[in-house]
Image 1: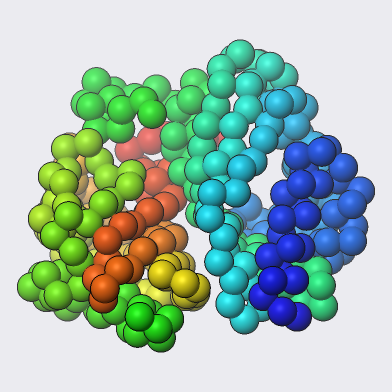
Image 2: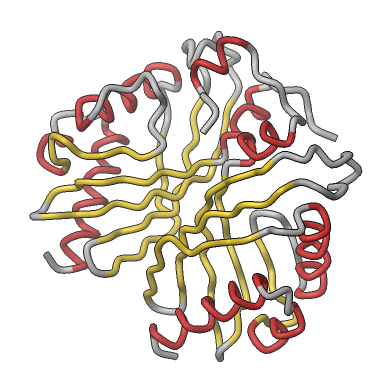
Length: 145
Length: 139
């Protein structure tokens, strides 16, 4: 699988999420796909969790900021935004616009994403949602972006 | 600069952290290197970056960075690392907890003329504060 083909698969995957066309991901994601960070263990589980995110943030959008490929992996630095107008995991909507950035690593085998690792700042995400409140000291150390 | 040379440069930086060889930062980083997402009280450039690393090491004296995976393309190198250490010194206002933390991190470096000029660092800060016990577990 060439690096350019692998990058194209990952771009198509981001586009599918953006167009809310999760069915297209059947072509792009293996059924037994495993997300190591969030312990999502199948394509179906992934679709369910993405559906929950889109319900909570109907304008959820991911922008690819940077992409690198080598071997069977593609690494993406992306920015996600969305307005919390729907319930999220039992939390009432806050109406807040959330922004967070992360890096995801995709492993691709035979043209499909089979595995993913990601590192993201969930602390900032939860703070923006109002789940975590910072002390005065913390506000100085981690100012609002 | 070849991708292999760039990878070797980043490995040298990580080895310098692990061996506390702070002088190596002068060789591998440009003086005005940009550290995206640096804490607001960190000085600009290489000096600020090095101080930040020294502060973390003072708080976690046994901290070690393990490279899990690395990729390079063009002028960039990205590293997926795990850092582990025991919280023995005050860190960002948190008194020592003596807890051991293990946190994943992905850092991306841009290299020009044999030196790191830009860095984007992502770490699991939530996991970090949860392991330190300073945030109650989230249900």
